[in-house]
Length: 201
Image (cartoon, rainbow, N blue to C red):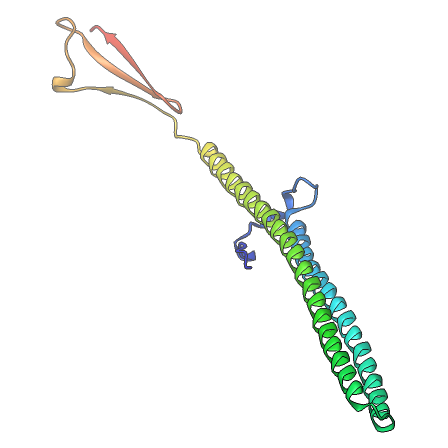
């Protein structure tokens, strides 16, 4: 389970000004999500550890019961004349003790599996939330970058020109015998405004 997050050097310095929907700055939200991941892993380990401790405690209790039973059967075997019945009883007791131990280990294993599967689901939900936050962060960053570029583009002023050109040769056509077309270009921002003036001598 590994999520890709943008490196801290690629994050904008204006990042602390952006707020998430909670009202927390994005950096604090990311730190909070990382803390929640660590806390979730700690809780998983704690739950599993508590289950294992209780399982081992149960096995210790079984061990002490088996030692007591072994001591009892040893004394009974030495002092009793019906050794065949005692051996059969001992075999039955040993089989039941082994079955109880295996059953106990299966119960512990089942509890650990249920805790792990439940926590894996929670971790996947947390990962999807973190990835959603990261995606929103990237979208906001792209929007901020785009807004900055558009503001820079708007802040550039085009030079203002107001010049007159007399077009020589074939580009000027006499309207009547003594008149020329004079092109007056006034560039005030955009678009270019063209004025055709008719001058008669």
